Amino acid sequence: MFKARYYKADGKKGKAHALPDSIFDGIVNEGAMHQVVKAYLSNQRQGTAAAKTRGEVRGGGRKPWRQKGTGRARQGTIRAVQWEGGGIAFPPIPHSWRLRVPKKVRSLARRSALNDRAEHDRVVVADLPAMDAPKTRAMTGFIGALELQGKTLILTNGKNDNVYLSARNLGQVEVMPFGTESVYDVLWANTVVIERSALDGLEGAVEEKKPAKKKAAAKKAEAAAEAPTDESAADADGPSDDETEEQSDA
Image (cartoon, rainbow, N blue to C red; front, side, top):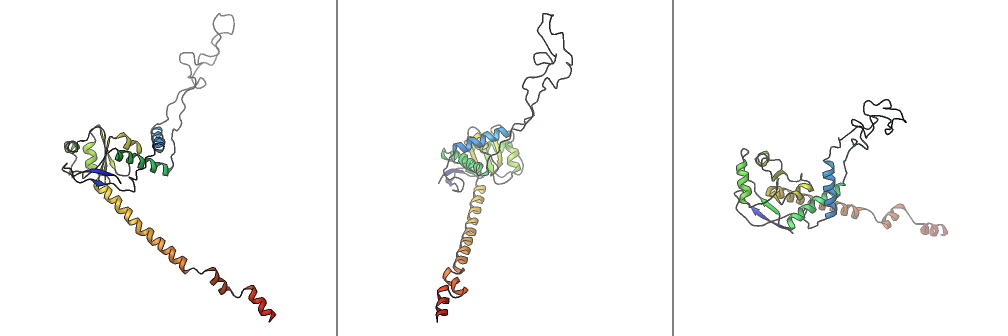
């Protein structure tokens, strides 16, 4: 189990906070992270670059000069690729760069990225300061109190417009709701700050799922116990073949 530094809303350091095992399980799969980051960067490409070939450029319908006798190189059209204003050889064509990654691989890569940051003590749990209105100075003071250096990713408990707007003008700070961050976002940041209430809500959801699974298992056990066995089913169907033969002999 990983533990992270914990800071209160006023910037004072508290007792280390245990990270939930449902996400911070200690598994770091570099191959999955590489695959997801590569797909993420590829999906950012618009794929709208285009150019015209010699068949799409206007003009050049006739031969510039006769084939032989001029002393110049033979030419078929002034819109060939070697002419100014001509077409482009092997031009870019609009197409999609989108890559698809399976859901389980994306989930594994996200856990791996968070585990990597937790393993190197780059995950911080904090109570974010309450803000009635966006205030960049308050956010700067909070980050300075935590003594964070480099790029920082702040994960809030749900959407928090005041925190987002307060950090929007800070070049090395990104704010987004916990659970919506991508693998690229986690690996981009030197430090990941997670709001404590977001982790508490995650632990509560995991605990609610456990009783539901236990109830389902108990129902299956009861159904198996109530189901008739093979011997009782045979008795209910009637006498066996051996019993019928004995009755016929008698």
